[in-house]
Image (cartoon, rainbow, N blue to C red; front, side, top):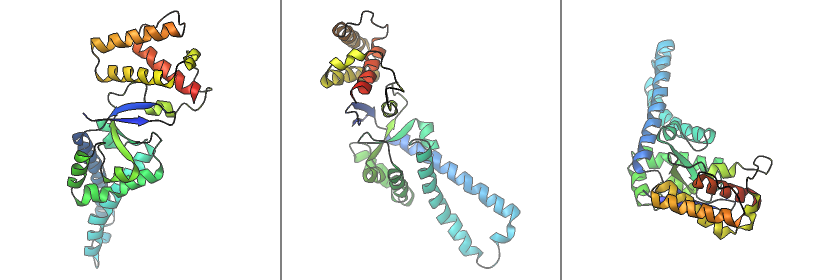
Length: 250
């Protein structure tokens, strides 16, 4: 599984797994089912309650426009609206536990979601997904054309730890979060990057060796910071230190 590192506005680098081609493909398939189910309902409604609209002069042109243009436009509007309203997750992405993020650590903006939705026309619909599959497979960061133009990618959220990018971005001030260990400010940024790496490795490879490394790191830091009682979960302790450091040094 490919991984990417995203540096947040607080100058903290976080590692994420990129969504696989299979996960992204299934998410699009689910989204297409939702859109076409909606249009099937609309057609059924028109045929049942407004039969005259589907017959008579000009009905052929109307049907061509409705069956071809409307679903395509509807799919792109659906992608844009769902990702905006659900923080980078359409219903298909929610089902597959994947999410859109920006590579610079900022929250995606309306224009980013708009570009992603517009490029579905080329990436997914006109090429039947072949172009998107080729570009995603050949991209080091798992990006299709829409991602490349918007500087985004899609990551897995299934195995995300409690210390996530969105958690950092939602810490607006000390009024919303009270640090547990204010003495963490005495540590350097390089120290915290090491801590972040230990936490990331425990999340990605939860084996005995990494747990031991986390325990030793937690004990060493607790000694430096003069913390008398070390919490039972060393990894959770390290995550708390990271969060405190971000809040206190931003």
